[in-house]
Image (cartoon, rainbow, N blue to C red; front, side, top):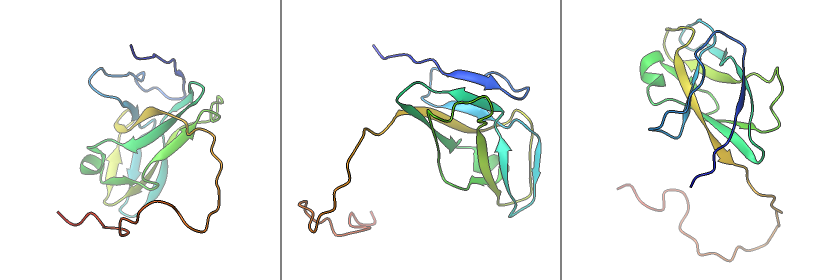
Length: 145
């Protein structure tokens, strides 16, 4: 049986409550403000929430599959990582958006999603002169097809 976690959520805007749908592993996040962006404009869009994540976990935030098609926005850092220490009342979550066309986003629109991921265990980095593994041939070594 899979372990169940509690994520404490503080809402800062009148958006519907977050929910974990049974058919997916990600939880949708909503724009907590109405936003108009011109092509080429960048903006942090408030997601209207602060959260306290379970100990030993972090949240990975990514656009939804329909985000670019619907609004023409890209998440500028490709993925957001929010660790368990970002858990205060005023540690709001944001979506870093770059508009590729003029667009309008309404308050409550589902623009991105997150999931919990186990944090990386403590690791020591060791400098070596030679790695013991076989070479695969560098970037693109598996071919085009």
